[in-house]
Image: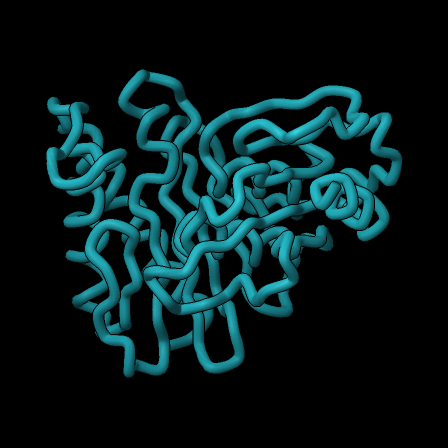
Length: 246
């Protein structure tokens, strides 16, 4: 499958989720596990209907890992920011990252609340609806606007912060320069589906993103958890990692 065909596959999967969400009437809990909504399962069924036909492996937050032996695995969060979606807050997305033996190959974060679609192809940069992404270039924490997940133990010295509740979109906001950095303040809070596509997009855009504990972020393990930190520049990333470690 070419990169172009693979990106189209991810768009098709995101389109299927958008169609499913348009007909959701039950935004309540699924009753199967804490934090899962009925809409998460609807979104998962929609994305699986597309990806299974393509014969790729799938690692999904909602339905686990299938086809782990296949040369191409799509890591997917069908509905990142599902609490936002359930409350009518338009900050939620479908995040998909196609990973092969060399790492992330093609990624898509489709803003399902009316925003752009962020995408990246390995070695070819990143864009949002066809417009090239470029991070802010901020190196001064005192001037930085950060996205946070959870609350830090202390004020890092930022200019402002936002806590918006959808890691994929938050990290893409670093790739686009809307935010200068992002810090996951909660240890082991995120599975690979939460951040993989956005981290790939960030790196292809020229931003930097690492795990707070120096582990590989692209791990194909449904039980693994990571703590991503991102910034538009390596200088700001170093400051954020040091501040978080205090």
